[in-house]
Length: 303
Image (cartoon, rainbow, N blue to C red; front, side, top):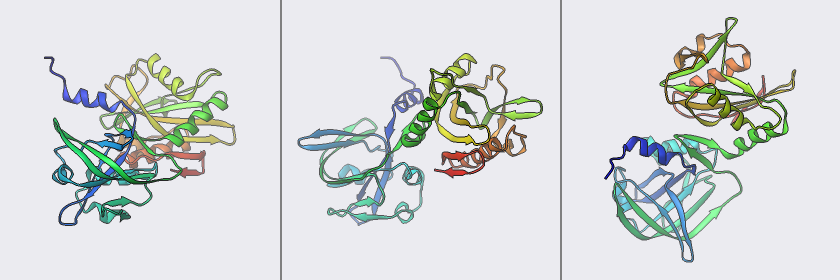
């Protein structure tokens, strides 16, 4: 039987776009526990069943392997911090968020887009995980967008749509990309100023297709991620969209050179807007919490 590379397999699984959930329950001593998961799916409407997959490596695995009930909290697009808390925090996770109990006494995260209160239908061993099937006893859901996850990064469906609409409604949108590799970003230099790799949409292509083709044409092997900044220069009526991307190698193909993220502050960028954007990128890359700037060149909001 062919031996599969675990890291490559994990990356392949990660290419599938999902939402983000936090699975919660109560231990026998009344301590709330929870973990972040994108391994969640609906199973059946009649009876109402869903499936989550807790890993055996979880510190709270024994609780979920033996629980009689649990909750699936589908996070909204503004709850990225909560996802990170339950994915990596070693401190008291529940002291860092607002939550309440459902009728079974399990934690429900305040502000979640949707929650499902479940009783355990079956709990099956499956390799290095368990298949935890729950029967939905109660649920709540509200209007909004869920937090997205793919290829190791979060994305906002609402903001991705906004970028797509701009690139289809406006002609000749400037589309750029922040390409990162091993703690460095690819920057181009011209006339003593540095800038990000960028191109312009034509009448027939949207922003994503344009920047993907640009990378391919320049021989850059990079995985395109979420949108990072959307803004307009009101003086020139030019729209700008910048995406994040992860390069698979350090080969720049003559497009520029990789500069350490820690050295971004020392760079002389071509525009003040790009300088501001990259200063934010340097800060946000330290903790992996990336926002999306929407507005004008000098004034806007980071979502």
